[in-house]
Structures are given as C-alpha cells and as structure tokens.
Length: 127
Image 1: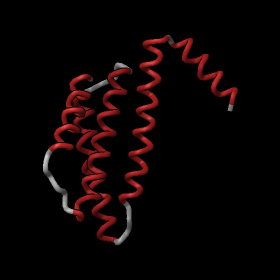
Image 2: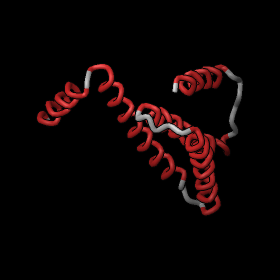
Image 3: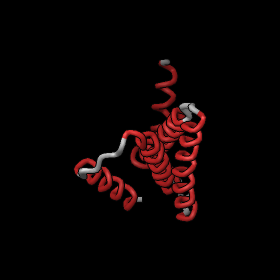
Image 4: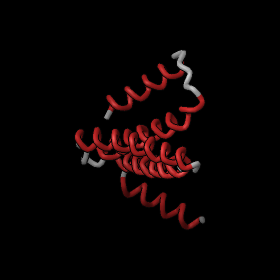
C-alpha cells in the first residue's frame, strides 16, 4: 500500500515540475485516464485495508478502467456527445466512496470501532 502512495506522490511532483504540455484535443482523454488510474489506486488502498488486495485484480482493473474511460470518451467524440462527463461523474463518485471507506478504516484502526460508531450516531441525530 505504501509503495502506491509513495508512487502517487512522486508522480504528482514530477507532473507538476515536468515541462510537458498536453494538446487541447487530448485533454479529455488525459483527464478520464488519470481519474481511472486514481480510482484504481484508491480501490487498491481500500482493498489492502480490508485485507482483500490482489495484485492481478489491481493491474487488470487499472488497465481496464483507464482504457474503458478513454474508449467511452472516444466514442462520445465520434458521436458528437460529451460522454466523458458521464465517465468523470462515475469515477468521481467511486473515488469519494473509496476515500470514505479508507477514512473509516483508518478511524476504526486508530480510535476504535465503538467510538467511531458512536460519533456516526451522534452526527446522524443532529441532521
């Protein structure tokens, strides 16, 4: 898990400081590809925390997510539809769900499951 997080941080730093310009016509493809990769990485972190991580599932999911997102974007471009927006919405929802699960796993690990459940109940009563 830590190798993935370290790799993600290094990739972000290199991406910020690298003088690479992506042509405007490829910006959509790059955006959906990156979101597909980020979704897979966060899914792997979640799986690792739940003790269900499998490297074969991670690699196949990473490649499948990225290529499917790019393919849907390409089909949308050919049809004159903004299908990349649907891809962005789906990946964004999955990313938020994965982050929520990761946060819950960390909280239960560090402050205890009972206390987290009590805090959730208090929060739900105030809504």
